[in-house]
Image 1 (cartoon, rainbow, N blue to C red):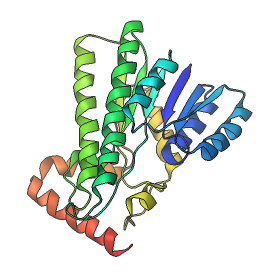
Image 2 (cartoon, rainbow, N blue to C red; image 1 turned 120 degrees about the vertical axis):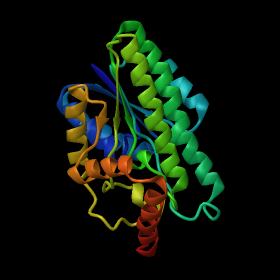
Image 3 (spheres, helix red, strand yellow; image 1 turned 135 degrees about the vertical axis):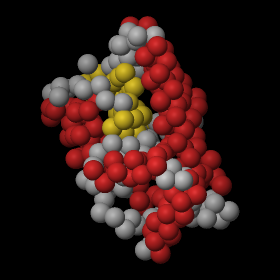
Length: 253
Protein backbone atom coordinates (compact mmCIF):
# COMPACT_ATOMS: atom_id res chain seq x y z
CA UNK A 1 0.00 0.00 0.00
CA UNK A 2 1.34 3.39 -1.02
CA UNK A 3 0.45 6.93 0.06
CA UNK A 4 1.40 10.11 -1.81
CA UNK A 5 1.48 13.25 0.35
CA UNK A 6 2.07 16.79 -0.89
CA UNK A 7 3.44 19.42 1.47
CA UNK A 8 5.11 16.60 3.37
CA UNK A 9 8.16 18.37 4.77
CA UNK A 10 6.44 19.91 7.81
CA UNK A 11 3.20 20.34 9.75
CA UNK A 12 0.20 18.21 8.88
CA UNK A 13 1.90 16.65 5.86
CA UNK A 14 4.91 15.50 7.87
CA UNK A 15 2.71 14.15 10.65
CA UNK A 16 0.55 12.35 8.08
CA UNK A 17 3.72 10.64 6.85
CA UNK A 18 4.68 9.65 10.38
CA UNK A 19 1.31 8.08 11.12
CA UNK A 20 1.00 6.27 7.80
CA UNK A 21 4.54 4.91 8.24
CA UNK A 22 3.57 3.39 11.59
CA UNK A 23 0.74 1.62 9.79
CA UNK A 24 3.19 0.09 7.32
CA UNK A 25 2.39 2.18 4.24
CA UNK A 26 5.08 2.98 1.70
CA UNK A 27 5.33 6.71 1.12
CA UNK A 28 5.88 9.23 -1.64
CA UNK A 29 6.65 12.57 -0.02
CA UNK A 30 6.41 15.74 -2.10
CA UNK A 31 7.60 19.21 -1.07
CA UNK A 32 9.80 22.12 -2.17
CA UNK A 33 12.30 22.05 0.70
CA UNK A 34 14.82 19.32 -0.08
CA UNK A 35 16.62 19.46 3.27
CA UNK A 36 13.45 19.14 5.33
CA UNK A 37 12.15 16.42 3.03
CA UNK A 38 15.33 14.38 3.39
CA UNK A 39 15.17 14.82 7.15
CA UNK A 40 11.64 13.37 7.21
CA UNK A 41 12.74 10.52 4.94
CA UNK A 42 15.68 9.65 7.19
CA UNK A 43 13.39 9.58 10.23
CA UNK A 44 10.73 7.40 8.60
CA UNK A 45 13.03 4.86 6.95
CA UNK A 46 13.67 3.49 10.43
CA UNK A 47 10.15 2.02 10.19
CA UNK A 48 11.37 -0.38 7.47
CA UNK A 49 9.11 1.06 4.80
CA UNK A 50 9.95 2.44 1.37
CA UNK A 51 10.11 6.24 1.37
CA UNK A 52 10.47 8.10 -1.91
CA UNK A 53 10.94 11.86 -1.98
CA UNK A 54 10.08 14.25 -4.80
CA UNK A 55 11.43 17.79 -4.56
CA UNK A 56 8.81 19.77 -6.42
CA UNK A 57 6.76 22.97 -6.44
CA UNK A 58 3.19 21.80 -7.06
CA UNK A 59 2.04 25.35 -7.80
CA UNK A 60 3.36 24.73 -11.33
CA UNK A 61 0.89 22.87 -13.53
CA UNK A 62 3.57 20.98 -15.46
CA UNK A 63 5.03 19.66 -12.20
CA UNK A 64 1.69 18.20 -11.11
CA UNK A 65 1.28 16.46 -14.46
CA UNK A 66 4.84 15.11 -14.30
CA UNK A 67 4.29 13.89 -10.75
CA UNK A 68 1.32 11.84 -11.93
CA UNK A 69 3.27 10.52 -14.91
CA UNK A 70 6.18 9.44 -12.71
CA UNK A 71 4.30 8.06 -9.70
CA UNK A 72 1.61 5.49 -10.44
CA UNK A 73 -0.40 2.89 -8.52
CA UNK A 74 -0.91 4.81 -5.31
CA UNK A 75 -3.61 3.75 -2.87
CA UNK A 76 -4.09 7.05 -1.04
CA UNK A 77 -3.56 10.62 -2.25
CA UNK A 78 -3.24 13.32 0.40
CA UNK A 79 -3.49 16.81 -1.10
CA UNK A 80 -2.02 18.90 1.68
CA UNK A 81 0.33 21.52 0.20
CA UNK A 82 -0.96 25.02 0.78
CA UNK A 83 -0.55 28.36 2.53
CA UNK A 84 -2.47 31.51 3.43
CA UNK A 85 -2.11 35.24 3.86
CA UNK A 86 -3.82 37.82 6.04
CA UNK A 87 -4.71 41.45 5.40
CA UNK A 88 -7.10 43.77 3.60
CA UNK A 89 -7.73 42.38 0.11
CA UNK A 90 -6.79 45.69 -1.56
CA UNK A 91 -3.43 45.71 0.26
CA UNK A 92 -2.24 42.11 0.20
CA UNK A 93 0.37 41.03 -2.34
CA UNK A 94 -1.15 39.97 -5.67
CA UNK A 95 1.70 37.65 -6.66
CA UNK A 96 1.52 35.83 -3.35
CA UNK A 97 -2.24 35.40 -3.78
CA UNK A 98 -1.89 34.09 -7.33
CA UNK A 99 0.67 31.57 -6.13
CA UNK A 100 -1.72 30.65 -3.30
CA UNK A 101 -4.48 29.97 -5.82
CA UNK A 102 -2.11 27.81 -7.88
CA UNK A 103 -1.04 25.84 -4.82
CA UNK A 104 -4.31 25.62 -2.88
CA UNK A 105 -6.63 25.13 -5.87
CA UNK A 106 -4.87 24.28 -9.12
CA UNK A 107 -2.57 21.61 -7.68
CA UNK A 108 -5.47 19.99 -5.78
CA UNK A 109 -7.61 20.06 -8.91
CA UNK A 110 -5.02 18.49 -11.20
CA UNK A 111 -3.83 15.79 -8.82
CA UNK A 112 -7.35 14.89 -7.67
CA UNK A 113 -8.51 14.57 -11.27
CA UNK A 114 -5.58 12.53 -12.58
CA UNK A 115 -5.37 10.12 -9.67
CA UNK A 116 -9.16 9.83 -9.46
CA UNK A 117 -9.22 8.58 -13.06
CA UNK A 118 -6.65 5.91 -12.14
CA UNK A 119 -8.53 4.90 -9.00
CA UNK A 120 -11.84 4.62 -10.84
CA UNK A 121 -10.24 2.24 -13.35
CA UNK A 122 -9.25 -0.14 -10.56
CA UNK A 123 -12.37 0.72 -8.51
CA UNK A 124 -10.42 1.44 -5.35
CA UNK A 125 -8.38 4.06 -3.55
CA UNK A 126 -8.79 7.06 -1.27
CA UNK A 127 -8.28 10.79 -1.74
CA UNK A 128 -7.95 13.08 1.27
CA UNK A 129 -8.12 16.78 0.46
CA UNK A 130 -6.92 18.96 3.33
CA UNK A 131 -9.36 21.87 3.47
CA UNK A 132 -10.29 23.93 6.54
CA UNK A 133 -13.27 25.09 8.55
CA UNK A 134 -12.58 28.29 6.58
CA UNK A 135 -14.00 26.54 3.54
CA UNK A 136 -17.53 26.85 4.93
CA UNK A 137 -17.60 30.62 5.43
CA UNK A 138 -16.53 33.99 3.98
CA UNK A 139 -13.18 35.24 5.25
CA UNK A 140 -12.70 39.00 5.26
CA UNK A 141 -9.04 39.88 5.86
CA UNK A 142 -8.14 36.38 4.64
CA UNK A 143 -10.38 36.52 1.57
CA UNK A 144 -8.22 34.58 -0.87
CA UNK A 145 -7.32 31.79 1.54
CA UNK A 146 -10.92 31.20 2.60
CA UNK A 147 -12.00 31.21 -1.05
CA UNK A 148 -9.40 28.59 -1.97
CA UNK A 149 -10.59 26.28 0.79
CA UNK A 150 -14.22 26.79 -0.27
CA UNK A 151 -13.18 25.57 -3.71
CA UNK A 152 -11.66 22.42 -2.22
CA UNK A 153 -14.80 21.75 -0.16
CA UNK A 154 -17.23 22.22 -3.06
CA UNK A 155 -15.12 20.28 -5.55
CA UNK A 156 -14.81 17.36 -3.15
CA UNK A 157 -18.53 17.38 -2.32
CA UNK A 158 -19.39 17.22 -6.01
CA UNK A 159 -16.96 14.37 -6.69
CA UNK A 160 -18.34 12.43 -3.72
CA UNK A 161 -21.85 12.57 -5.20
CA UNK A 162 -20.60 11.45 -8.60
CA UNK A 163 -18.84 8.48 -7.01
CA UNK A 164 -21.97 7.58 -5.05
CA UNK A 165 -24.12 7.61 -8.19
CA UNK A 166 -21.62 5.36 -9.95
CA UNK A 167 -21.50 3.04 -6.91
CA UNK A 168 -17.73 3.39 -7.05
CA UNK A 169 -15.54 2.02 -4.28
CA UNK A 170 -13.23 5.02 -4.60
CA UNK A 171 -13.45 7.27 -1.54
CA UNK A 172 -12.92 11.01 -1.26
CA UNK A 173 -12.74 12.86 2.07
CA UNK A 174 -12.00 16.37 3.29
CA UNK A 175 -10.12 17.33 6.44
CA UNK A 176 -11.47 20.59 7.87
CA UNK A 177 -9.61 21.61 11.04
CA UNK A 178 -9.63 24.92 12.84
CA UNK A 179 -6.36 26.65 13.82
CA UNK A 180 -3.46 24.17 13.94
CA UNK A 181 0.00 24.76 15.38
CA UNK A 182 2.10 24.59 12.18
CA UNK A 183 4.30 26.86 10.06
CA UNK A 184 1.10 28.11 8.37
CA UNK A 185 0.83 31.05 10.78
CA UNK A 186 4.29 32.38 9.94
CA UNK A 187 3.64 32.25 6.20
CA UNK A 188 0.17 33.76 6.58
CA UNK A 189 1.42 36.60 8.82
CA UNK A 190 -1.11 35.87 11.58
CA UNK A 191 -1.24 35.07 15.28
CA UNK A 192 -4.31 33.15 16.40
CA UNK A 193 -6.19 34.20 19.53
CA UNK A 194 -7.61 30.73 20.05
CA UNK A 195 -5.49 27.85 21.27
CA UNK A 196 -4.13 26.01 18.26
CA UNK A 197 -4.65 22.27 17.95
CA UNK A 198 -1.70 19.89 17.96
CA UNK A 199 -0.92 18.80 14.41
CA UNK A 200 -0.24 15.16 15.31
CA UNK A 201 -3.54 14.90 17.19
CA UNK A 202 -5.37 16.28 14.15
CA UNK A 203 -3.63 13.78 11.89
CA UNK A 204 -4.33 10.76 14.11
CA UNK A 205 -8.01 11.69 14.18
CA UNK A 206 -8.09 12.32 10.44
CA UNK A 207 -6.54 9.01 9.43
CA UNK A 208 -8.83 7.09 11.77
CA UNK A 209 -11.88 8.74 10.18
CA UNK A 210 -10.45 8.27 6.68
CA UNK A 211 -10.07 4.54 7.31
CA UNK A 212 -13.73 4.41 8.39
CA UNK A 213 -14.89 6.10 5.19
CA UNK A 214 -15.88 9.45 6.72
CA UNK A 215 -16.29 12.31 4.22
CA UNK A 216 -16.38 15.39 6.47
CA UNK A 217 -13.47 15.03 8.90
CA UNK A 218 -13.81 17.87 11.40
CA UNK A 219 -11.58 17.52 14.48
CA UNK A 220 -12.71 19.07 17.77
CA UNK A 221 -16.07 19.86 19.32
CA UNK A 222 -15.55 23.62 18.98
CA UNK A 223 -14.85 23.34 15.25
CA UNK A 224 -17.91 21.12 14.77
CA UNK A 225 -20.06 23.73 16.52
CA UNK A 226 -18.55 26.43 14.32
CA UNK A 227 -19.59 24.59 11.19
CA UNK A 228 -23.09 24.04 12.59
CA UNK A 229 -23.37 27.74 13.43
CA UNK A 230 -22.28 28.76 9.94
CA UNK A 231 -25.14 26.72 8.48
CA UNK A 232 -27.71 28.49 10.69
CA UNK A 233 -26.56 32.11 10.75
CA UNK A 234 -26.85 34.65 7.90
CA UNK A 235 -23.75 35.16 5.78
CA UNK A 236 -23.64 38.87 6.62
CA UNK A 237 -23.37 38.07 10.33
CA UNK A 238 -20.74 35.39 9.72
CA UNK A 239 -18.72 37.90 7.69
CA UNK A 240 -18.83 40.47 10.51
CA UNK A 241 -17.79 37.88 13.08
CA UNK A 242 -14.98 36.57 10.91
CA UNK A 243 -13.71 40.09 10.24
CA UNK A 244 -13.37 40.73 13.98
CA UNK A 245 -11.52 37.45 14.48
CA UNK A 246 -9.06 38.19 11.68
CA UNK A 247 -8.62 41.78 12.86
CA UNK A 248 -7.51 40.53 16.28
CA UNK A 249 -4.97 38.25 14.57
CA UNK A 250 -3.47 41.21 12.75
CA UNK A 251 -3.35 43.23 15.98
CA UNK A 252 -1.40 40.43 17.67
CA UNK A 253 1.29 40.28 14.95
